[in-house]
Length: 310
Ligand SMILES: Cc1cc2nc3c(=O)[nH]c(=O)nc-3n(C[C@H](O)[C@H](O)[C@H](O)COP(=O)(O)O)c2cc1C
Image 1 (cartoon, rainbow, N blue to C red):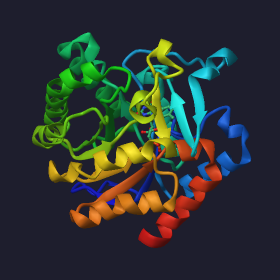
Image 2: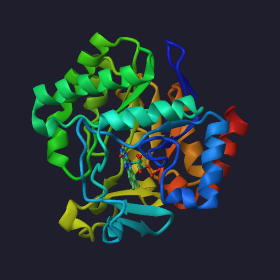
Image 3: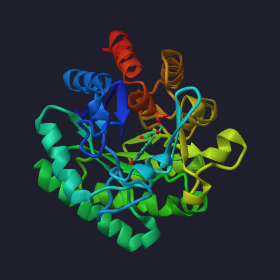
Image 4: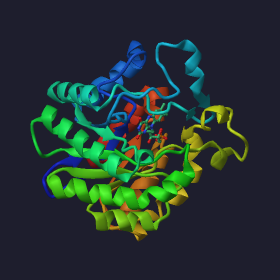
């Protein structure tokens, strides 16, 4: 569990984006009884849920739920893995904020996730991010909430390398206007370690490492989704690559950490908590693919974590 100085907290295990943009589950997954059971457990146990990313304006990525041909952009991989080139399809921050506020009123512990579009240039991206924060503020009716910024995008490694300065300045500007918001920055495996030091200096409160990772980094071959950007690998297929990267992060920052990408069993989860112990650092573990692909296993893992850590 991570508790922040303003008393907001993140549960020891958290669900990352697998409950959709509202954070209370989404179609067609809600048709499956095991997924519905998982959603009820998450609500009942007050498990933190990071919503899927919203952008300032509605955005159509590669994935359109109603078009069955597009489901090929979300593929299964061995060892409870997944490859997705979803591409940030969302209805825009206004609708997402409204839905998240409804989820919060219904008793879900939802953390909004916003994707600043730095490809539009720094000034626009920061302006839009501050407007998005205003929108969340309007719907939440409080100046105190946990906000995740998704600054990772496995489809564009070079862009990520250039963006680290802009991200840091964006964090500083948000914290200046809204000191009571807890900022989690969700990073990518391609980020250099000094980025974590920069984020702490910029005023970030927590790091979530890491988002899905490029296909080529896991399989040493060309992605079957190359024509739509390559896509990101998640779930069990990713753990062997992500763990050696994330376990080094505490050497570069003293911030609390959410570790994820590849956690599919208790063994993976405990390895992540071990990093926290070794560095005397509050740690939470995030899961997404496990919740989407095998919700029954995800539920078991949640209960395991609650048994051991409350
Ligand atoms: C189909 C799919 C869609 C995702 N969408 C988002 C998103 O909108 N925003 C985000 O920050 N991460 C997104 N992610 C990344 C997950 O939240 C998570 O960080 C990643 O899958 C690694 O964790 P895992 O191995 O437990 O799945 C998505 C992952 C998948 C599989």
